[in-house]
Structures are given as structure tokens and as C-alpha cells.
Length: 312
Image (cartoon, rainbow, N blue to C red):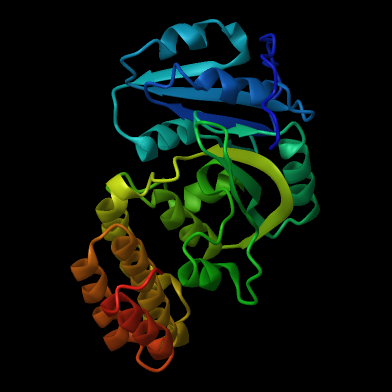
């Protein structure tokens, strides 16, 4: 497993010139982890950046930890409004040509920004990019990497077909700041999948690419989905419906229904594994009605396995 950077001595990266990259770190009650995230930014081998930490109404020692960094980070304090609200505040304050997002409990490897900036500079049609992402539990146990997708379609279609197509998502993406003036901010009404919603909107306007190197590290519990499954499912349904019109008209029919059925099938599997068989069977029945030809064989096999109480 890639090791975390050692604690970096805070140094000022402010200058009179506009930075190329604005790094936005939303932080809520993040005293336990924000130092690790900040240190990983300050040891980047690419130096033309500013750091904006949005303290989203923290009630712990987050402010005290951030104060120790002096001019190395610009801290914005606001009442608690959630992750989308914090990211939007950071975007509004950003000065860079590019915006990079990093959640407070995740971190980067030192070459992350340099590789992404070089990619974006070399391909003007790219609106955003990400990297293959390593994952681990809070105890340090390695989880499978979140790798770049191998989609043969345009990025927007790939995100519809596989919501997690953008590797690393909220801690891996670097985007052109000007794009947010066109697509708007993160949807603050969503309680989950607000990042997927944003990547769909960006992909509708321009290209996406992924660097197949594990330059981002995310921390997650192996059971982190269990408590949020209903929230995530509800958000996924909203995101798939609200962004249907972003697809080209020929794709809003069978392709969209197939993608929607695939999303329902995924949540059915996760629900079944958590003992919620009735919910799982209901979602599979719904998926079968939506896409009987393109998804029927898979859905029926899942239904039979669940009814036989087999492991999925």
C-alpha cells in the first residue's frame, strides 16, 4: 500500500500571480484527518497552486489545526451546509485555471497534480480528468483499486452506464474552472452522488480522461455503504432521471432504460447482501420491466439466485 506523506512544514504558496490550480478541500469535523490531506497537497511536485479549505461549520478542532498552516492554506469558514455547499463555496473563491477537489479524509501522491496539469494542457478539449485511485480501510487494509474505466462510448454514456466510471471521483478530479460557469455548481439538494451528477453535466459539454496511475488514495470502511444505501439509491434515481435530457435524443430511450435497469440491479445486489431481500426483489422486478431484452438474462439469474438464497 502506498504510504502517506510525512508531515510537511507549512510554507506559503501565495504570490501576486494567479495560480494555475485551485485545490479545494471541504472539511467538516475533520481535525482527525485534514492534516494528512493538506500535507499531501503541500508536497506535490507541481507548485503553482493555491489551497482553499472550506471549514463547513466544524464543531471540533478543525479550525485550530488549519490555523497552524498559516498562509499555506486559505481557510473559508461557513455554516454547515454539506459537501456540495462547501465545494461550491470553494469554486466561488477559486482563482486558478484549474480546480482540483480533495475530500479531507483522502490524500494524493506527490505527482498527482503535475500529471493531471500536463494532460489537460496537452488536450484543450478535455474539461476534466481523474486518476486511478487506491483504496484502504481506516485500519490500513488494502481494498481493490478504483481503476480507470475502459468505456468504448463517450464519457457521458459511460457515466450513465456505470455511475462510478470517473475513477476517484470527488478526491481525484481536476477540472477547468471556466466549465463551472456553464454547468453550474454541485447540486446542494442531493444528499449523495452529487459528484456523479456533476461529472454527467461536465461530460455533456466536453471530454474526460483518466490517468491510469494510482495517484489518489481514498479511505473507506468496507461496510460504509450499509448505513447510506437508501440515501444513495434515492440519489441515484434522481441523478439518472434529472440528467436524461443531457443524452442525445436517440439515447434517451432504450439506452437510458438499460442504464437505469443496470443501476437498479446494482442496488438490488447491495440490498440483498445486507439482508433486505424484499427491496432487492422489488428493484429487480422494476429493472426487468424497464429492460427485458438488454438486461433480462442477468436480472432473471439474480432473481433466481436470491429466491434460492444463494450468495451473490
